Structures are given as structure tokens and as C-alpha cells.
Image 1 (cartoon, rainbow, N blue to C red):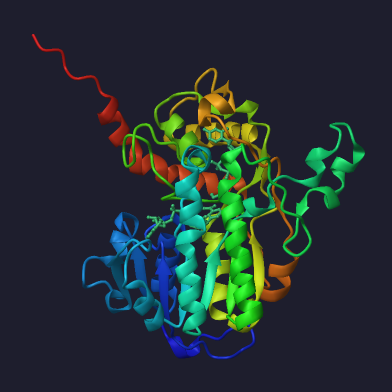
Image 2: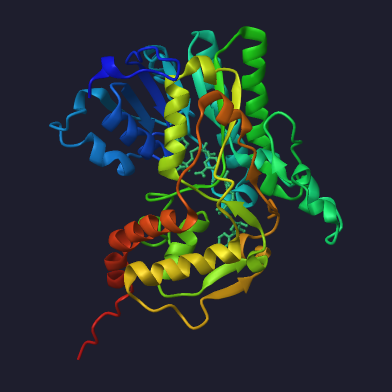
Length: 389
Ligand SMILES: NC(=O)c1ccc[n+]([C@@H]2O[C@H](COP(=O)([O-])OP(=O)(O)OC[C@H]3O[C@@H](n4cnc5c(N)ncnc54)[C@H](O)[C@@H]3O)[C@@H](O)[C@H]2O)c1
Ligand SMILES: O=c1ccn([C@@H]2O[C@H](COP(=O)(O)OP(=O)(O)O[C@H]3OC[C@](O)(CO)[C@H]3O)[C@@H](O)[C@H]2O)c(=O)[nH]1
């Protein structure tokens, strides 16, 4: 790729930079590394405890980008190499976090440490060394919508002012402390406030990203195949696991909560624009989602069932879903966001970015990947051992 021909949104040439990416071995990190290697001249110092999802970018040494990506296996909780790696880079991107809802109410201490305490040194090292930081927060910082507190039949529930989530004006509405679901959102909110304060008081250059349910290949794990049998991943992997195993999809509390899902590849385009347009992205908090892809979780289950039948050639179950209470599925202390529609005004104005992929299309490519990657492994794992005579 010819680096000198690449220009930013204002027509200035883009200079190659070094990026310290923390959490590079996860779902979003793996897609961001792929994009940076394939389409840019930038270098990546990839930090994580695991590297399975980026192995294809690290080996063999003959890959065209081999000299531009370096994996450092480290845990940011307790590794003295962190500051020097941040110092070696022009930009730090922090993706590291516990971010699966099943953990928020069952491992609240780990959740709070991971999303707040462990992120503090990263912020401090960036601020102290005058380095730019792109920090991954979450749409969960909005919590519940204002509209959810209105009577069920109130016409105001139809008014976007009561449910569209805007970076600079929507409040953050969490449940009571005993609903430990909100441990994650609250920790993310506090780290956002710390970063914002470092910007305001010490002039740190920062961008905060609030992802709205990014989904696609390599998200989480399939329990019992590449993750713990009893583990509970996010909804895409839960439903994929059910489909691969020909089990009904479990609808928590009837699957009435609403989400907007965005294809990971669309979202990564937005992150690349942030990386390469610091003058437009610094000091901003960006929603990154697809407001056109809203469904209830029940509708998501129905669409995934239909798409999976198409891509696998296997008929769907007669009864494809079952209801389950949140207490049975997640345990005590679970609570939920009712609805998540991102306001796209800021990202559109600053970066001219819009998502492209429909929910059907993104599910078709993602479930094709899930079927190709896991169907055979599941068949083998569930095959009954041959009877011995
Ligand atoms: N995927 C989404 O839709 C979504 C939505 C909202 C927010 N986010 C945020 O985006 C970020 C990335 O999410 P993801 O979906 O890629 O999750 P992920 O779990 O796939 O990736 C996180 C990565 O961070 C690594 N990590 C965690 N703690 C670490 C530590 N102490 N030291 C080193 N590495 C560590 C993990 O090993 C993992 O590879 C998270 O901060 C998450 O809160 C994601
Ligand atoms: O088998 C299942 C699994 C989940 N649900 C319900 O689906 C909704 C979405 O669940 P999930 O994708 O796991 O997570 P959330 O959207 O609630 O939270 C995430 O949003 C962003 C992020 O910060 C990181 O990805 C994370 O916190 C939900 O209503 C579940 O109850 C189901 O019915 N069946």
C-alpha cells in the first residue's frame, strides 16, 4: 500500500504512526489489527493475555505486514512494561475489559477492577507522556431510557426525545446498587469522567468510543468448544451456540429488550477515521452504532433462526425459542437496558461516517462463518462414543 497517497478528511497526507493497542487479541482488536495491517502503513504493538484471534496476523513471518505488528503477552494489571510500550507509541487504544453481561452481577469486583482500576494507569501514562488515547467505553453508560419510566401506554414513549441516546445531552440512568448488572456501566462511566478530566485539566488528547452492540465473526466463544462449557457469552454467541447444537434459543424475560446491532466491519471503518483524523476526533465522545438495525431480542432470535437455516441447509426446530427468567439465566442482580438507539449527529458531523450493512446481511455473513468454523467441532463433541461389545 502506498502510504504517501493516503490523505485524511481534510486532504492532508496521513503519516504512518505506531499504535499501542491494549486488548488487541479480543473481538474488536482482532478486526482493527486486520484493517490496520491490510489497508494502512501503521505499526501495531499488540498487547493482550491471549492471541488466538490474531494468530493469522502474526504467523508466518513471511506475511507482508510482519514487521508492522508485534505481540506482547501481558496483563495490564501487573506488568511494568506497560508504560514503556505506551511511550514507544504515538497513540494508545485501550480495549481491555471484562465486557460480558453474565460477569457483571456474578463477578462485580473483577468487573469494576477491570473497567475502572486497571484502566487508570493507562490514562495516567498517556497523560504524563503527552500521548493520545482512544478509550473504549460502552453504550451501557446510558443505562435505561427516560421513556422506560413513563406509563406503558404513554404516547411520549414514541417521541425520540425520550429514547434516542445522545453523547452530550442524555443522562446516565442506572438501577439500584443491589442490581449489580450496573457495576460495568458505572465503572465505564467513571473512567470516562477521569479521561475527560485529564483532557480538561491537563490537556490530554483523547477520544472516547461508545460501541452499540458491534457483532460479527470471532465474537466471544462457543461454550465447550473454544470457551468454558458453563460460560455465558454475549447474545450473538449464545444464539449461535443454540443454533449449532439444534437447541431452542433462550429468550431472557421473553426477549422484549431492544438493541441496535452493527456489523463489526462498518464499525471498524469509524475507528480508522478516528485514528487518522485526530484534529476532528480529539476531545470527542462518539456513539458508534446502526440506528437502522433495531430489533427486539425475540426478533433477533427469529431472524438468526431463519438465516441459519439458509446458510447451513438444516431445517429449523418446530419450536425455535423458549422463555427463561433473567434470574435463572444470569442469576441474582441482573437488570437490563430497555432500548438503545444511538444519536449519530456527532460522528456524522465530525467524521462523515455512516453504517452500511443491514441486519440480515450481517447475520448472513456472520452465521456462515459460525457454521464453517464450529459445526464440525460441535458434531464431534456431541457424537456419542461407539458402544463397546
Ligand atoms: N463488542 C461490543 O459490541 C462492545 C460494546 C460496548 C463496549 N465494548 C467495549 O469494547 C472493548 C472491546 O470489546 P470486545 O468486544 O472486543 O471484547 P473482548 O473481550 O473480545 O476483548 C477484550 C480483550 O481485552 C483483553 N484483556 C482484558 N483484560 C486484560 C488485561 N488485564 N490485560 C491485558 N489484556 C486484557 C482480553 O483478553 C480480550 O482479548 C471493551 O472495552 C468493551 O467494554 C464492546
Ligand atoms: O441467550 C441469550 C443471551 C442474551 N439475551 C438477551 O439479549 C440482550 C443482549 O445481550 P448481550 O449481547 O449479551 O449484552 P447487552 O447488549 O445487554 O450488553 C452489552 O452491550 C454492550 C456491552 O457493553 C459490550 O458488548 C455489553 O454490556 C439482553 O437483553 C439479554 O438479556 C437473551 O435473551 N438470550
